[in-house]
Length: 436
Image (tube, rainbow, N blue to C red; front, side, top):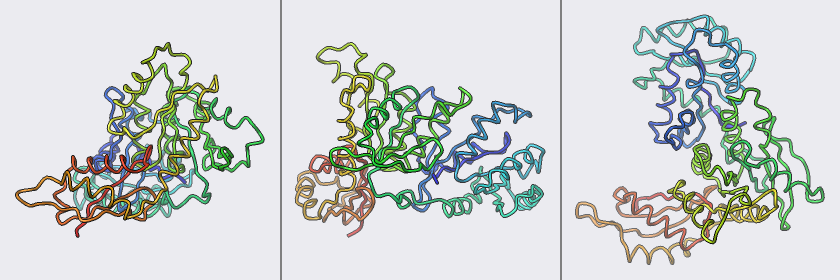
């Protein structure tokens, strides 16, 4: 089950306010590309070490009494069906309405983990009004009164949410490398999958996917077994054209959660766009390995500098994620498609490597000695030693006398030095500072 939490409910109950509180207050909102308004409705929340994606359906539900007219209903039902947890929001001030009852019927049929969030419980009297919503008949569904404006009750709500979600890194039963292929519709994902899996002698077995559109195929290449997650059915399964991007992002989130490395495929003629950045931001937040594959490179008119110029444009757009390899290819011409897979497997190894404490200290401490952390109010900061923590993704602890005074620019300096000395291409890394 993917860790997608959908906030649903009739108009004006406070869905977007709750969404902003869950993601913005933790500074975890996905990259916001100017002019791409839909992108602001996907965010990541991190509560007590559990990471989950939050979907705000507020931007897709028109402020109309006829909330269940066809297109709106399809959008909301899509969010409900894809979510692992539903936050069904109601309004303590307005009380129970017929639209709330309509929503409750759909939720009852889905039989999913649901929390009824009684918003606008801004005082004790309004909080007592939340008992009215037991009339909806949603048995065994807890009611949490909150005020998304002042924040009361949101801590209890988040505690309940994380108690119901999986640990993404621990839930995979298959220990083979898992590679997902993501991207906007029509960039060539289906063609790439068909090219890779077209030779029957290389296919080991079919594994039932976690979602009805994702197919996991075990594959052997370079004498290595790995699993490719095919999400190429994204467009075909969407009944309404307006829903394609929404559906695509939700499928991308699910595939990301269950993969080790993701190949973000873009169209060379269209370039790197807002939704691509959303997927990349998700991948980095989830600490997944990443590679960018520029497909349809054969359609671009080139000279000796075209590739370098195009690469520079992409790197500028993905800044500060400049550790991500970019491969220019053509699935149609079968140019460098296996190089992409080989690089993805290399990134998997990078993501899982363990660097000894002696190696870290022998390489990084001399650099720190040459360029020590800036002093703070006359206090000199000393970093004593470095070690890699036993986590699922590369995390390095720097032990210091004054860890609280180490600033972001110096943190970036240390990250750059780690990448300079060790093979960490395509892998998001984490560094933490501890008292010694």
